Image 1 (tube, each protein chain N blue to C red):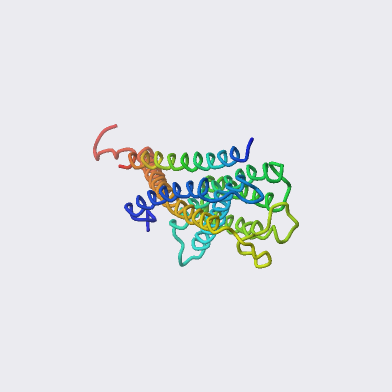
Image 2 (cartoon, helix red, strand yellow):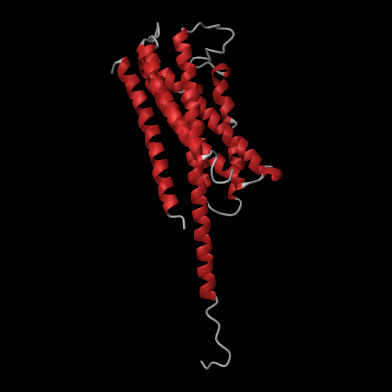
Length: 250
Length: 37
């Protein structure tokens, strides 16, 4: 595990599997699953909103874990730093999608695009925290990796706040439904299958994209090292011109 | 906009964003691989 997370053939296979799973998901979610009894067709946004939110949690969790492994001296490696950065970028992508999809779902169901609701605000804070983290990664200098790892461990505190916000505060956003013991909600079998399929599909997609992003980060790190080595060699050559031969007259 | 309009807008945004991101990753990776000595 140096410049790739997965064997190239495994990565390619995973890419095709993700694509096939997405096609099946689109058919299930847009055609096979019945419309919601209350929300009608608007509820079909759930099959992309829920998995993107799950991926935001997963991606930032992976970033935090990789950052902790970087900070621990016995496991410190550039691999963990690159993995943390790659996963954070995916987390920002999927958190942004979660916010947009939530807004698109909120308009027909709540009648508004946005509310200053604990779930929505904490999710927006999560998005900007990790945009800041990605910006921090671009600031060069000694100790950059350590600084970023600490920032990632601070930022991940918002993940449980987002998750439990609907229980800790009175929110417009609904509480958890599927695993809520108090509600004991019954969900139509096809809807449940489609929802689980969407979570599985997006998880596959995350692993595939993480591998691609990690590969790119490795290549870019190699290029930066080569450029640095070239620049140092040029400076040394400028400072130390060719030695004058013994006995030669100037 | 109808409910179906919101649904297709949402799914379209997901497809365009993820597809665009994937394409950008592929192109940047190929460029980085070509620049390797």
